[in-house]
Amino acid sequence: MIQLKTKEEIEELRRSALMVGDVLAEVSKHIKPGVTTKQLDKIAEDYIRSFGAIPTFKGYCGYPASLCISINDVVVHGIPGERVVKEGDIVSIDCGVTLGGWVGDSAYTFALAGVEDEVMKLCRVTKESLYIGIEQCTVKQRLGDLGFHIQDYCQSFGYGVVRELCGHGVGRRMHEDPSVPNYGKRGNGTRFREGMTIAVEPMITLGKKDVFFEADQWTCRTVDHSPAAHYEHDIAITESGPYILSSFDKIEEAVKTNINLEQI
Ligand code: MF3
Ligand code: CO
Image 1 (tube, rainbow, N blue to C red):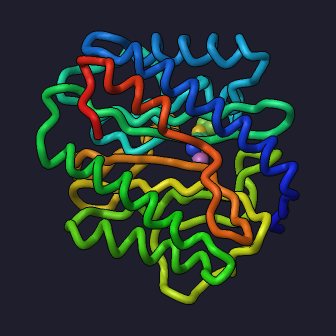
Image 2: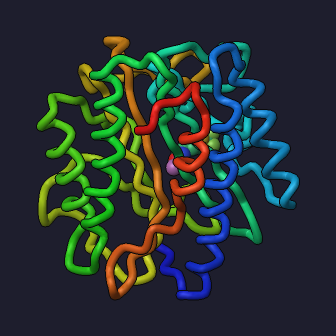
């Protein structure tokens, strides 16, 4: 069942969503060759707790960390550990924060200096596809329109659109109805309604779309080991169109001042 939110509730959700952007911005200051994903996770957890907020992912279905950190051919749900970030890597960092009972969930893929041009382009196109999907979030459109436009745009570059994982409703819980696929048919699926709040999160591969899960049941990798990018925003559907609740502004400000990172 889709839980519609009032304007006041949407503003509360926005506070959580904006905090995720603050966390990702803070974490991004520490991304450099040699840092372990576990170190980045600790920075995020401490930062989240310093605001009296809760890292939503930690303990969710047994997930052991506050961030998902997914490098190169890891699409999503990479578990922080001893893995070291290297020059030329792309690093998706996904974070959830619970504040005042509302869950913000947002992700950004960072590119380390030395990244190959075609991988940089994958990141750029994936980020663009997120906004193309968000443009469809009006009361005139349906979930299938969002999925169609993300899929159509990404496939026009020959990229793969991951099917096994989708965006989702977001609110008092991290995963609410509806499921928000990054593929679909125009005019199909649930119509958007004022007060719906969803997380849109295209997961796009440079090669084939097929993925598998590692034995840890979380780490999701491309079968052909091609790199994958992932960006996620929380949005609300309003009478005047999509309202983006999370923000990449602080992240992108921080990226500008980190010489180890390329601007996407
Ligand atoms: N943004 C991801 C999602 O929507 C994060 C979930 S990771 C988990 O599903 F560990 F918390 F499950
Ligand atoms: Co999500």
